[in-house]
Length: 234
Image (cartoon, rainbow, N blue to C red):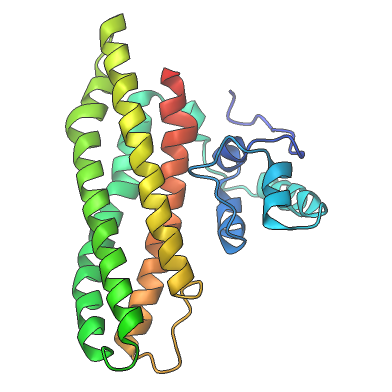
């Protein structure tokens, strides 16, 4: 598709397509807990119905998209990128920053576990457990992508057998995307949409802010893979 191509947004637009060509909408979808990363094949209409939103939300999205198109600093749609270019982009703006955030969070979450153990034992234990599970899931997932999937995708003139091997890997990795998404949904619920409790110290507030940033980035990261890169091998 051409860089300046405009998509028609309506009730039948798939969420994966929407965020691919209009990445700025992800912050609004995140606010409404509309899953566009692991459920990118859903239509906007179905997502609105599931979320209990009024039908005029489509008009809101259309208006936001018009403003986006008028902006002089639009990103080139990721669909314009080759496999290698898209992989490089994912590594640069998702894998590496997410690793940094997770390293920072690991220390901070442990501090919160000790500092607020008697304020809300159940919350801090659950927070520690879910973050630790997410970190392990993502680190192992990144390793599979960087050591197996991405090198296989970069290989030119793949044979049919090699393409089938890539497809097999994709099925496994998409399942891991679903798993990471579920952990994040648990974190969103237990933190009340990343809203720190009244007793929160600066460290706990930093944990909530960094978890929020990590969750938003992971959602967009997964959407680029599920709805664009992985789709090329269907």
